[in-house]
Every structure is written in structure tokens, then in C-alpha cells.
Image 1 (cartoon, one colour):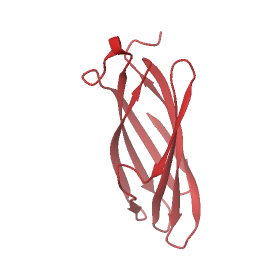
Image 2 (cartoon, helix red, strand yellow; image 1 turned 135 degrees about the vertical axis):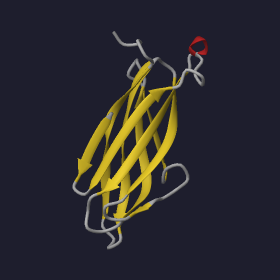
Image 3 (tube, one colour; image 1 turned 90 degrees about the vertical axis):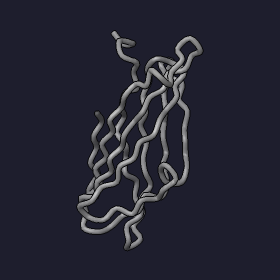
Length: 127
């Protein structure tokens, strides 16, 4: 599990390998990740965009930018959280992800909430 807390925003990520969606013989490993974004601040904040950096076992990094997450731009009230599940296909049995969410408070302050690096690994792939 990865866990980060920026002043007021906490991001937790849990990852699992999905053998039923993977095809190692074709060079495809599939990982499911669950994200929880919690607002510990005094004012609501909206997630505007996401930025991911995805590294495979060879260290090749690809980047993903886009609006919101899973088709949403959640507005997270103080003391509340937003959870979603997504997936990452990878061309190696292990790698990592990290990134950030661009967020805006109701008063108009724009800030980056870092997503801590977390591992993507097929069980027993790293030893």
C-alpha cells in the first residue's frame, strides 16, 4: 500500500495483480488499483486532472494525463473521501506508478496532490 498526505489531502493506493486479465505469454500483465482520496482540510476541493508516470521493469516510463478519474471530477467535502478502482496493463511482470492530482479548492486555490509511488508486481516476480 502507498500512502501520502499533503496538507489536507491524503491518498492511499492498494494494488493487486489480476491473473485472469493477464497474458504473460503475450507480454501482458494487468494490475488493479484502488485509490482513496480523503480531504482533511477545512474546505471542499475538486479533483480536476490526473498525471501518472508508469515505469516497467526495464525502467521505461510512460505518462498519462487526463481530466478527472474514471470519468469523474469528484468534489470532496472536508472530512469525506472519494474512492475509485482502475487498472494498469504493463508489458513486464513488475513496475511502478506514481503521479499527482491537480485539485482546486472552492475558494479557487489550485494545488498538486502527489500520489506516492507504488509497486506493480506479479506475485513471486521479484526475488
